[in-house]
Amino acid sequence: MEQENLTRKQLREQKRQEKLVARAGTARSRTRQKMIVILIIILGVVGLGVLLTIAGNSGGDTTGNVDTIADPVKGNTDATVVVKEYSDFQCPACKAAKPAVDQILTQYGDRIRFEYNDFPLRSTHRNAEKAAIAANCADLQGTFWEYHDMLFEKQSDWEGLSGTGLVDVFVGYGEQLTPDVATFRTCIENNETQERVNEDIREATRRDVGSTPTFFVGEERVVGADPAGLTTAIEKALAQ
Amino acid sequence: MFIRKAEFLPTVSAVFRVALGAVFLLSSIGKLLEPREEFLGAVRAFALLPQPLDVWYATLLPWVELLVGVLILIGFYWRIAAGTILLMLLSFLIAIEHARGSDEILAACGCFGVFSGTETLAEILMRDALFFLAAAFVFVFPRTKFALENRFTISRDAAGQ
Image (cartoon, rainbow over all chains, first blue to last red; front, side):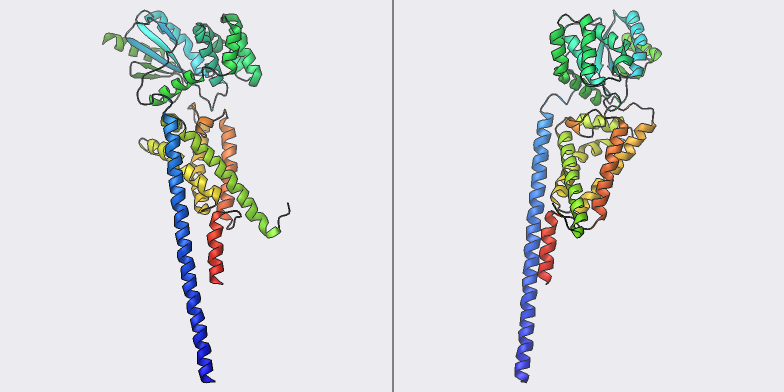
């Protein structure tokens, strides 16, 4: 009887030991599976991330400050002193800066090269990017500056519009200025000048432009509609 | 489809997980697909982080978004992922609220990189607040359905029986 009890005890102990071994085996197997999943996730994330990064950076030059697409220019195109404006057609401060820019061009037009760059503030001004696209479409037809003036002049008319209404208004301005309205409409509707705008945005970002309008006289930065600051910077650049 | 009462909240958690995972994956892919300067410019426009912290933030954020997006979507270490998402959303909410309160004109939120639409700051704030609530639910509620992590948890319970 005692022997039988002992055997039962032994059997119970044996079963308990077997369970413990099985549990340890399951735990080991689970840990192994988990490690495999972690490894797959890490490899997948790194692989996907690297592929996306390569794809994202293969679109153009992101290393220098060199413009690869010509910007609209005013003044003396051969001048060595270059004034760059980073502007947004829907920004009231950029509209307010126009008289200062006109004054600078009247005063120094024969000695400076003035370049316009788009920097649409997309989060704040929902129509700024489309306006920049439209202005670049006008540039393709040689009427950028007239269109530029029109957009600023009529800023309050189009800033609240959206969708086809906005496109129709932008095309309407073109009817008065651009020679080929059908091409102009297609250009705006298909965002054909988007890359020109994107390139300007990338350039502005590289130069740490945080608000509009921002001007660069050579490498000297002038933020806001500041005629005195611009004049000083231009005089300094011309004296060099 | 009938869902038992006990499974309702874990199912809600799973729906939130999948939604957050999809959003963060899209957001990271959009950011990685554009030149790094674009998102760095967006970060700098908020004028909150000093250099070189802004460079680190702009470089690492898309990768962290990608990782937590995958983790929360498949439900693997999903509570850690939800906690990380909460921290990221908190930083976004602070940045957006700061931009709303300042006179600085913001260039772009850069939220979805190449997939970014035209949203106002108020719309972005509202959207991020909703994501924050969803992530908080996933983080706080201890169970979720359709998660890879459950495979390991269930097998441990089974082993202990």
